[in-house]
Length: 288
Image (cartoon, helix red, strand yellow):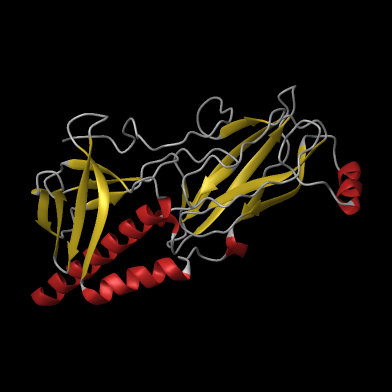
């Protein structure tokens, strides 16, 4: 079954109720509230105080107010920061205090790869961002451009999550992954999207040292069974969901859902990628 990573109707997905206009970076109208609590399981409740417009921003300190009055009269964001636990499955919130007529903010979350290149994260154009398995061992940051009602842009502000340290798993998740790797075997309960956008079947994903298998529970038949190869792709689609997509060595793609549990989705993805990496290392050693 050929699918796009941005596939359709996830029966468990919750949508973020935030105004996003245009393409590229997301334009968030700060005249209305930035929502909270609109993420899957694993999102940390991070309710900031609200101003008269209802936006989630902290109150400026006296020093911030003085600095604002001394700067040029362009839109701005004071006290820009990222709050939340920067761990896979948890939510982050970029926030600050709008000054000098700021009524619109353009957000973009960025992944900093180990080779120094930047990756603008697809679909990550809201103040909120849920950390995923794709962020592990990388730095992530957010850029914000304030604007006013006349379309004037202020100075871009940027902050790194996790005090500009690489993202790591929480101890419990890392312990679970290490345990699976040590045993050389793992089993996960998942939902598999079959032949239509709403036909999700309960299935079991089985990982072994050199191969993996997906069995449909209702029929106990194997939907996928193959050795790990460099052609296997394990991707996390953009958006707020607990989905991931396996693209097999023959090019066929299969969407999965971790029962609305983002943390479990990330555990599965990280574990499977580790099994794949080790299997490929063993193949290379065998040829040496």
